[in-house]
Length: 333
Ligand code: TYM
Image (cartoon, rainbow, N blue to C red; front, side, top):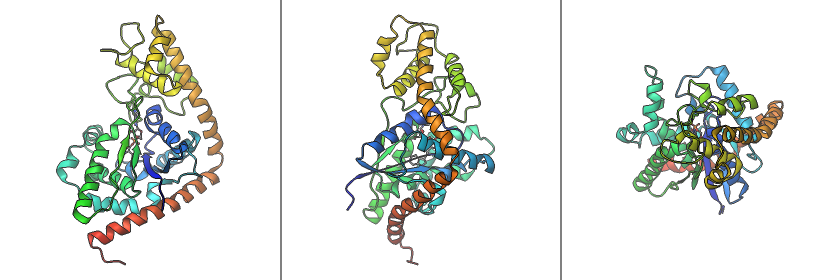
């Protein structure tokens, strides 16, 4: 019997990976995987991505890019399956069962639905609406104990817990009720241009985000242009959201605390601070980008990683799915 706790998390290949995705999620996956306390499953959530229409060619490129970045950031496929959601049919299958156990009312309250509906006005597919039930299926299929994500996924996790409890109460104990793992620093990296908005790859202003594959020049330029305030002190506080955001990026990539950062830049201006943030980000990205380039030159290896990943993930997922199918009363095939 497997005593280790389980982890499942995913990222959508819906565009280039941002520093927000790395700081809020991926970097923590690497740490949790290293700790050897958990059995981890890492997923490229491609079925979620088609809730918004994709150009097939770009979609394929983004998917392979993201896989290479997972590995380049330090995920080890020898330790944990890394797989595409669309390669494990149990996600769609359990997703449907959970959709049939989700209330219209609770799913209508999801704030990401509101945000995304505004962005894609006139072009809103039903998948965007039912997406959180599919996300619950992703997690519950693996009986995950812990789900490392950024703060924007909190509401989806709450729904996942509600669905797990609802199903367990209606059909007897079936699903583990998962907990979120949301980092203390970097759970919500904000836009560099508007610190009231989260940093997002779908932002039309490219100065608002840093991509994991941005060149050093681009990183320096974007950080230099980041919105701060009319003051000059590097510290947290009311009206200093822009500086605080840069501070949390700095802490996340350098391992320093907010207090250490305030002390380090005491008496120095925003110019010096921004230079240091940019340098720290560039130094973090450098080895990741080098490894990414190596991996992209070895497509056979990448294929092997996602094939093996799907095989292992499918085995775990099928165990849960067959239980669920039996409990809801489907005739066994
Ligand atoms: P996605 O692809 O939008 O984001 C992937 C991860 O990155 C985190 N994140 C951020 N963290 C900090 N600051 C930001 N600005 C920022 N932007 C994004 C997200 O919180 C997330 O952890 N629905 C999910 C993907 C998913 C999933 C799952 C996650 C599908 N099934 C099951 C966990 C478990 C999503 O769209 O994330």
